[in-house]
Length: 155
Length: 72
Image (cartoon, rainbow over all chains, first blue to last red; front, side, top):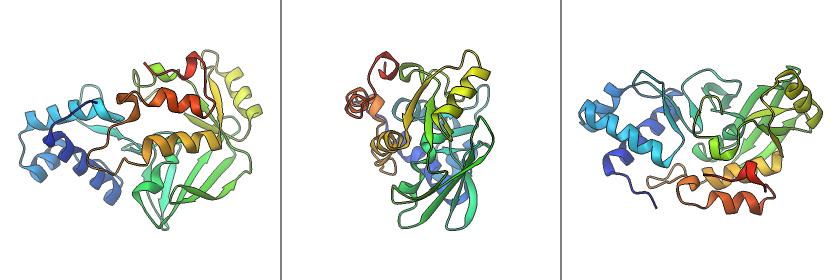
């Protein structure tokens, strides 16, 4: 079992709380202020988080772009919670994970078939699919699982 | 990971994107997978199953077998 520091755990919580509340990731300064940590400590926390979760900071920057299932960028997986759209999911499968962060609420995932562009919609609550359109939806994994974390944006 | 309207649409997309061949899974398998990796994510002490060695056996248990589905 990989152990990470309490600073990293707290940093991860700040990031998740920001995503849930605003649909956006905090920047380094936000985390520094929230946890009274130095910039260096926050960046070390980022490194630790990447060991235990699906987490990506844009190369050459300090900007958080992914902490699954949330994406701080526009993706083909738009998420609406309780009628409010301000979230994007990392990918098709992670979109299905959103409802765990919004208990007792209806989570709607709007996307489109990557082949034909026709809209696809899933409505979920507490991990269960309430409705889906079309009736048949399949998922496609374009990278072997062993290489999934080598290039997260591509995967 | 992308979603498609059917296996036929996924195959057509692969045909038009040489080099991006992958594997398909049903929505039910995708839900089982994401529940396994994601149900504890809000927890303070969460660790992704890829880091605990439990992801591989789980994928096998839902019928995702073969080299493609083996974690590092």
